[in-house]
Image (cartoon, rainbow, N blue to C red; front, top):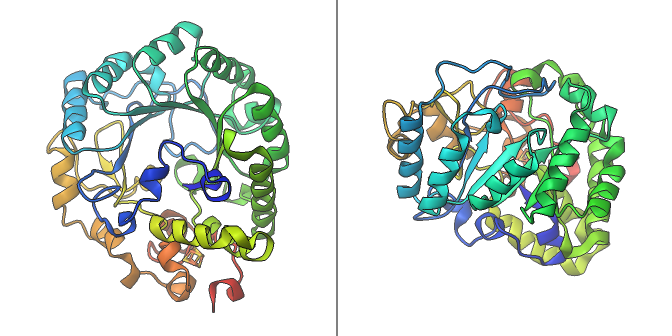
Length: 387
Ligand code: SF4
């Protein structure tokens, strides 16, 4: 995650200290020494929408292999012991899990920060009240366009209106909420409108996700934007971040070439900010899947991130997450933690590899059939990466 607001406007929001703390880039098992990773837990596969790009390939049926409440509680207690900074409840749609509020009750009692990634359609006022009472730190609502554009992408008409209502309910109750927007060629021209929406509705945060080609998104690689469009999108997001200032939090996610692009742009257009940006992106260290970032799916299988379910390092029904994470001898997990020697192609020759850490391996594998190849979504020129 690249916080443009932190880098451009000197703000400090939750998560910035984790992303830009000294020594973090060197830590192989967590966000920093003595801490576990950020854990995304897809606590259910069930979902009431049918999104075209769903990495979890969710559907509207509850899966019998989901973790039982007792298993889920043991897992959360283990994460507390492992000193993870945050549990990110995702799905499917987490609010469809029948015992979801039992889980939030436990995170609240243990004082583990929880966040929810939701499609927002079930954020009724009483649900938001319960979320707020469980000390949830943040609710991220997926919104991939305005009106029918969002509905088409999410596969259900009326989804946009329901999600927006859910966001408004959160804001009314002072529950921190924000947007998750996955950039693709059908919606990138609506980014200006998304900025207008957050201003009008006073939505304090928006994360712009680059597409990662996993799950159902692997069927729509052709819908990703071109390298030129990616540069245009970044130019627009940077411009808008500067206009909005520190009151809003603007981030881009899942393409660490963004950090380099921002720095190179700063050198030319706002050189007084460039040194600080370089310092911060160096301390972050780029992609940290399998290091500072982990994913556990609805069955309890452990993966390096939520887009890399093709690799599993164990299951929490058999062993504690913390044990597996620290002691696994899996070659992919260890490869991710020592990846510089394994990376091939363009990324291996790039002078920014220490800032970007070769970006997303799953995109490389899907496009080039090799997990260690270069990331096809890099939009920097040969000249910019020093080859
Ligand atoms: S070439 Fe690879 S390592 Fe370099 S910025 Fe692009 S994605 Fe990152």
